[in-house]
Image 1: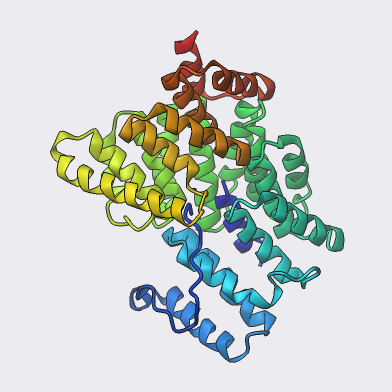
Image 2 (image 1 turned 90 degrees about the horizontal axis):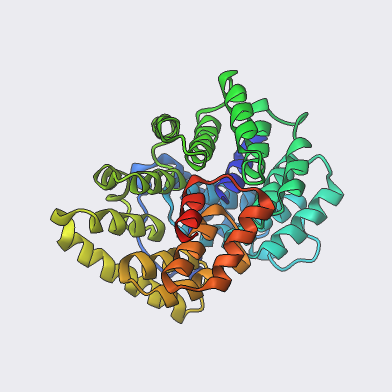
Length: 386
């Protein structure tokens, strides 16, 4: 869902699932990034060089952070988030930093699952600038991830005079569709989309959201059409590829997921889905075995360094690939304490069913009942138990 926060950085001026790596020193070489193949990456390199000469220049630092966050969104490479945080070093621990630094700091905190810290920064910024559209959209994202749907919609509606109807409709649709109003949210979103006029990135975001809502409503045909249309507009978007891959896996179309995933195995989220697709295909057994081992090593390394950002993905890995329901459930429980999206609820419910844990199932059932969540997969899962 923090895909929405990325979008907010591009609007009014716009599952990265791994923790950003920040090198110990400026001379450390982690890997040569493909600047030659992507002019936008060349621009980041140029800006970083300028920032190295003037590290407290907020204009340059904010530009580096913003471009790095955009690159992370496009590529799924979390190292760009490390670059973004490094660019904000002079303001990272400041009590009252400039507004530009405060917004970018909040966005990065959200990516690190420091939701309380992100909200604190955004509250401060919106007290200072109540009509800061980027801050409103980012706060709506965080509130949605945490399950505070009414507060998120209130922030979204404040955008009405600040940005396009499609952006407002998309912002509102995300929390509304999770709080018992999926049908209305979908209809309003598609009406706004039909008006046109927004950039390809914004339209791809709206289509991705529409696809997710349609899938939860049980309308697989519409979901598939929306995913394909979004992919044509923004084929590099890592969040979109992961979401579409999940849809294809859910619908028994594992082979169709392979092209979305096979060229970006550096991204842990995409690698997990690639392994899940390969597991379903007998002729991909060799690649599956290799990717299963790679994922195990990555999760072990993350745990060793205290990185808990992968808990949802690791819970899926333990349940769907290793078959360890108890370990999966422990991870899913811890993850649910932090973020509360449908995917988080789903793995919690699946692990609870597999482990036969009635208390965990009650958490799932209570959430569905209290929020009136419309999700065909979760309803079917609950029905299978009952």
